[in-house]
Length: 100
View 1: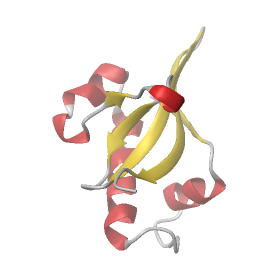
View 2: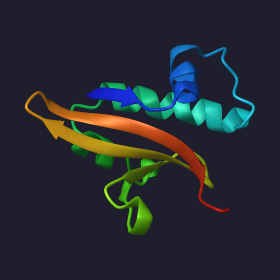
View 3: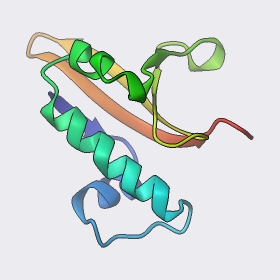
């Protein structure tokens, strides 16, 4: 599946496994890289939905139009699915703490 990453910090985390963001702990870095591997291997949204542990959810309210994937107990990866004539693309937006 095609994807793009909106944040330069998340692009660096995806491109270089030695890159360490001070914003996230080691477990979040590890989970992010694991989920990005699943995104790269997915053919479409259904493949991601099949991984029940990711808990792919459509969001509501001021996050309408986006979805989340579980990274850790508290942290979620916010994404958006964009469909164009070339197929579906995932836009990786940010990592958020759902318990704040």
